[in-house]
Image (cartoon, rainbow, N blue to C red; front, side, top):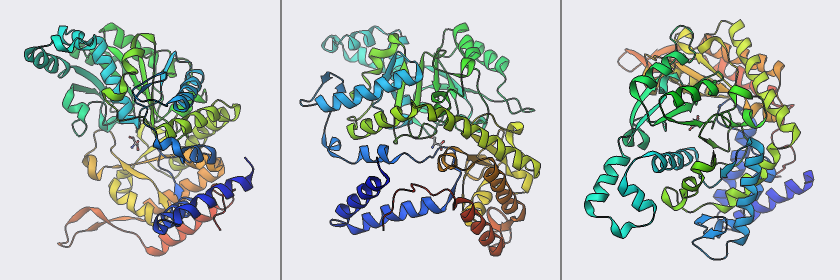
Length: 478
Ligand code: DSN
């Protein structure tokens, strides 16, 4: 697409929206301006390409398409079949998977589909077998009761939240924590790294039905070959949630033992993080789980979003291009440059560095909580999010960590020199922020003191850092 075409497309779209509800058009334009101006270090965010964004804004949104390609509950799905099949084909080729299900609307939806597929495959229940064989009329009330009892309470072993695991891996604020009897494995308190012997020990003791690997705040690679061996040793199904690092797998930065696809029974992901696609989810698996996975809608998902599947097909096609591998490598190079810059200035990092796309700063080294640090950085034009650190004394709300990631800034083109400058800005803010007090004079975990002149100066330097790397350079909204 020519640069002119991109500008014309977005301008025309906004003009049409403005004709109906100008405040929405204004908010869309304001969002672009905000994203252009902020130093975005949220590890789970990125910037999708204009082609990906434009593939979503059309009449595919109007179509219902429950079911799967060629087997729909609605008529007239031939064009939806085309984009869904294309997205699945690109996903299979990109990740070397035998089956791809591209309907999930998000990461949690992808995980629910995977949980369903595993339960349906593994739970020994005559009632479930009848239900699966669509002999539901043969089931008595007692059968249904037994089925519900047997599907619930199954065991799941996943990474603990404060070690970097994800809510959907069996934690109480999520439905997975209510459905499953969950236990978690943490990290070695001395190194911050996964201790595979401890995981194996927990698996032997707990005998989970599902062993989950994957994280949203662990700054290191995971050895999936070892995790699979652990799963096999206790007869567990091995599931990997690669939502955060799918782009690094797609770009062949994570290969061999660190590529989950050849090792896991089932892999879930989002498509919008390091993979740089539209917001959404996806499941990859082998033939043994494919049939159950394909029942995702209507089993656990609402109607598929064909416009988003079209955008997934576009983004996955982009990720198959050779330059995506270069992008993925630069994400990691930038994260390491950022980590090195912070360490040289005296910051404490969980695990002492990174080998993926994210860095976790333990801001207790600056005398701050995560909440104070997050807000002080935001005041200075740096967008991050607070996160627990292992054995966090401040809990999940205030936290002691700041999670930063490089997928978005790498998309803009920033490199190692800018990462070092970013480390300097972060260190300046954190070292000049002090904890504040509440109205009663008592120490507060939320209040902080930062000289507004420092925040302003850092904000200006952050904006200057971004100037040579315009976001969506071809898009001029006038
Ligand atoms: N919300 C995503 C993240 O920030 O990591 C994960 O669900």
